[in-house]
Image (cartoon, rainbow, N blue to C red; front, side, top):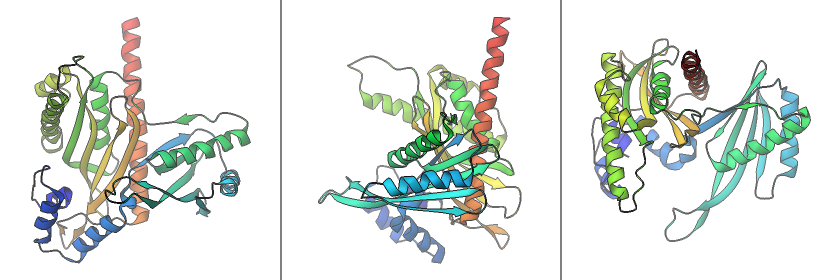
Length: 343
């Protein structure tokens, strides 16, 4: 609800209750697209689940993926319904319907139906496996990969987007600043939210967690202002004095929401979100395309609108490719610095 209001240029306090926010939003005029967006988020919240992916570095065929998927379907637990089918010439889909306990229900614990859509996308001698960023989907993919390993009679190498090897806060932050500024056919337009963590932990039992949270919140606001300068003024974040002060305290970006303007048709302003499930470790990269401001009648819509599934697939691929490329660039820099010190 805070994001819905922010899209209209209205900022409410994060401390406002859900009832207060709902009441305030209900007083605003809503057009057809606004109502559809609200209903879509209310009734199909699963669609907005963040995604993650791995890259299997071996040549796989549709038939091989189909075979292991069919095996999984035949041996699936009784509470799972597995649907598999080919999509085009290079994609295979495995959809698993299951249920889980919804602990958010205060009065009555209920089981909530869920669905994990897993995509195998073959690109030459590698295969991208895209899935919801939750434990169940990862468990299913792990099972499918083990079956593929058995079929290939080898442990298939898998690439993940992780920052575990980088303990330097500057490298962690550089990953995000490069990701948002180097998407092909896009120009960074705005940064709306940044979350940070510190790799300097005070070991003091008398230290209040509240103080740590307040420090992180303040650092997050300062980092957001700095990253906005990258978007609006083209300033170098990593070279700024303000950033160096935050870096000295160990702060680095762990999650970010940004908007990028498409430089080719249909010229959308797309809102993305990316972050890590385990911020301190830099593990569990997850991301989502939140929607887009459409360019209509020579102006942009006032609120985020849905994106067609085909277009969203392209945008998700851009995030994945840019993240892998950025990770490789940072890794090369680190290796070059290490080589120089050795010499």
